[in-house]
Image (cartoon, rainbow, N blue to C red; front, side, top):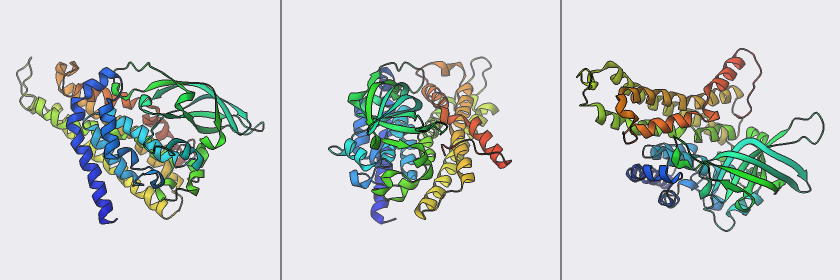
Length: 395
């Protein structure tokens, strides 16, 4: 790594750190709006956060995933909704690089700062037509959708021949071809603006689709023009961390506030100091250890992925299965940690103005994402270790 690259990375980290106080101040505004304030999005754009894994051909920095996810984790210390939106929107700049270059030109040809939201659930209805597909459907949970001009939408393409397996693809659709349903009324991650998206019989050319199998095999159309090694990383390993990593930062961001609340607090019923309560002590210790553990495992795994991509060699399937399980455990572990801290704060914690209340709601909301349910991925890991076939290809 050159001295200039190190300087650029430090600039990103410093920018994220400086944003934390303002993000904390705007948490209530984001919750009230049901989306991020434009000020927050503008600050992230100006800091270059959305460009961290974007192709250099379109003004991006083509940096390692560690830089991106450390930035996301830092922002989550101030506002988990902000970090969540950055994660799931900015990571699309990396995925778009996997599409045919014509799709990249459609989005970034005139403005390389244009953003893309998504909903990957395979609920779309697809019909084959000359040159592409007709797409219809109703998708949920498209985070940051009102800040974006395009959307990635998931659907199964029917097989061309009877008996063949359907083909899961991501469809790239412009804002004029879909409608946002303003229905984000939730109790956690309120500022993510994860509204529904509706498409009615939109034409999507073939080149504006990305096959899941191409992402799995790390051999996508965009690799013909984007040769940097980060675009040979497995799609399934990158996206899932966009929806779990913000929980790490949100948990880290409330540990100091937990100390402030409980250092001198006395229980109203028994008059004992909370700081001497073994459960309160253990809750804090476990939260600190959880942050350390989750970060350490994640960045260790990224080191292995990047090393394989740099050498243009496949990442062993057994490693991919284990890494997928590692990612799925992050939100669950952070939820367990914040829940113990929340309980140790007593009934005061249920007040919306309590320093831990929003982090408690946000982390538990993030835990509900399908990618953050460790049981399916843990069963797959355990099964394959005992000779059963792999049941997951989003790896």
